Image 1: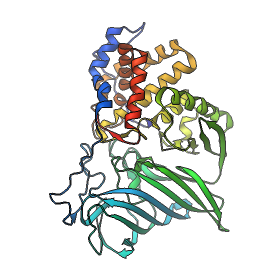
Image 2 (image 1 turned 60 degrees about the horizontal axis):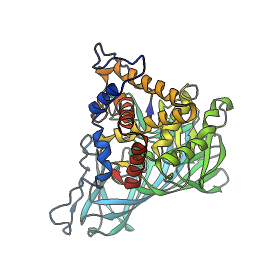
Image 3 (image 1 turned 90 degrees about the horizontal axis):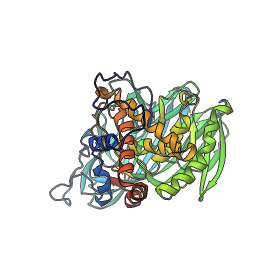
Image 4 (image 1 turned 180 degrees about the vertical axis):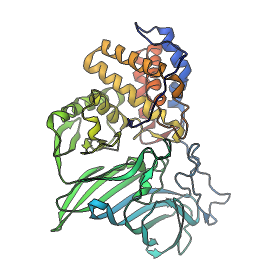
Length: 473
């Protein structure tokens, strides 16, 4: 994620290290590395996948699933007692101007304990009915928690299916990761359509979900919109059905995906552009059709970026890639899986090409290698930010990377009082620049210390060991 509507940033009066004006020294960079604690990075490849969801004393005796997964920052995010395997979102958008939906979300899951009841995260809407394994289930609501009691308890390690029918319009939701009521998240309408940008907690504002990175699942999106609107969503567009006055778009995202990475974008005209195939990976983009073409030119470098990152990180982990650019400001960009989303506010940024590289790098670091806990956000953002520098080095040369590192270093030095060390964000300032820029400089310091061969070898080992898994710090 790249966020630019971040609020004011104060400048530190006495940063602990002076801004860099000449060539940075090895000792200075190692100081940054030590402050960051990057020795932990070299040991990441030795750690095992873990889940904090604690089973009851006797998992074969039915009991309620937990209403949270014990995240250290957001303990009520997600739900225990089951693993979601697949979501099918049937979204009939009856009025785009108000984002009015008639919807059914079907969840295929496997229990991790015997369940007398279980929870989903879900905000707003009128619930028309819920079934579990085809039988009507009772339910209640407590804030964001949707508590479902099936007609019969679910046995431990049993596959089961939940279907939730609901209608209405998504409520305006503000992210808990920023100061109160500053950054909306989830399904966000604008004049000519909507976009979805859900990190970290917005997915529940348009579908019932186990909303935590610990529980990834495959997705089918069936989105019906009135003419002339069009849809761009994660995954492969498998079918478009002309219903007369409406069109149904069916997307299949077969690779397991974290809920905050889902996106459904509706607009009254997208240009669907195919940008070739790189190492067997198709690249397709959805550009709002009234955007000036010259502002989209940096996206032409995505194939070259993909080829380069394949070389230094390892093979791209999903079926396809591309970007969607919506014709409204979104406050940044997000690495929504296989289809990163960008807003109008970024198109005139002199750093747009870097940001495109950043969101692409997240497909490896953040999407395939996923968080175990939101406090580990540096594992996403530091790696993606340093990937910007790697792209600058590849495309412009070593001197350009040197200047890029100085700029990142100086940015943090001048604002030291308002950022946290990369591994120490706070719950209400999750995306402060420390997890981005300070972390990126720390990774560069590690590269200087151990050399290119070991650094890039470790990157590849890290990705290979944890691809498709979650990784704690």
